[in-house]
Amino acid sequence: MPDTETPGEFELIKRYLAPLSANEPGAYSLTDDAAVIPSRAGHDVVITMDTLVSGVHFLADTEPEHIAAKVVRVNMSDLAAMGARPAFYTLSLALPKNPRGGSGQKTDGLWLERFSEALGIEQRIYDISIIGGDTVSTPGPLTLTITAFGYVEAGQAIRRSTANQGDLVVVSGTIGDAAFGLSALKGELAALSKSSREIVVERHNRPLPQIELGLRLRNFAGAAIDVSDGLIQDLGHICTESGVTAVVELEKVPTSPAVREAMERTHREKKDILSGGDDYQLLFTIASWRQAELQEISKEIGVELTVIGKIGQKLPPTGVDNLVSASAGVVVVDGDGSPIDSAFAGFRHF
Image (cartoon, rainbow, N blue to C red; front, side, top):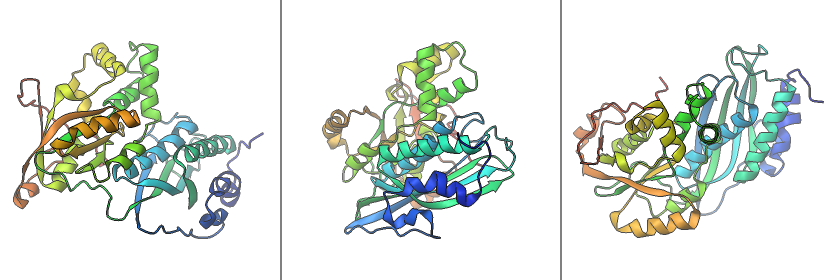
């Protein structure tokens, strides 16, 4: 029977985390101060880090299995956006001193067992291993940080800064599911059907990083980013880094039947979903002449890929400096091509 008390630091590592490092010799079963990362000839190492905080990135009563899945997958999505194949990760785990910690999670032995078992499942899904990290107590809410490492062939990492004038703007999957999932978890979508609620909640709790698509985008995409803070804001990051503008056709932005039902039941407009975060789809650009190849990739990997707009003019350096907000370089138009007057703020950390 799992303990109902939180074990000490070294017992926690030995019992729950060290078994997850068994497939990576350089982790030394998490018994040393650092790990040794094996090099791969002809490859670059891609490194990303994301932090999730209870009450900010997930609700206080979220199950440990969902927390484990999300903290892994948001990092896998960052690797996917750069065309990298995931390899290993480190985990920083700040557990509340108070049994409830102001965060709703009672992170005792039972919680840790469920969490570590879920981490093991995620490792098998993405073929990764834990190689180190840190465990501490905190007077604040439950906080988790993963640093993920991946490999990409030398010089082939996909950047945000390489979109070209005339490129098509493409997004994978559907947009808005996770935002409505959060609303459902907050009890704001009582009228939504059970099946649609389950779909959007699952998308919020367990995003699906597009690893295979990211691998296929190397030497194919102009620029790429994952949709974490809102489609328009994230496209704005591409525009800012590439020094270009972009136009998005609202009617072409793909939505799931569950999202369409949610919009109808809540009388929300489609433009509202453009600011929702946590979709973790890939947003990328391609040369217009490669559109046929795009559909071939879509069929081969079984992921919907939709052209939703186009990269506009190249801006002079002074024009880039004047993009005062993340989405300032992006214009959203309706079916008639008329600009939609709306603020697409996206998620803000500060």
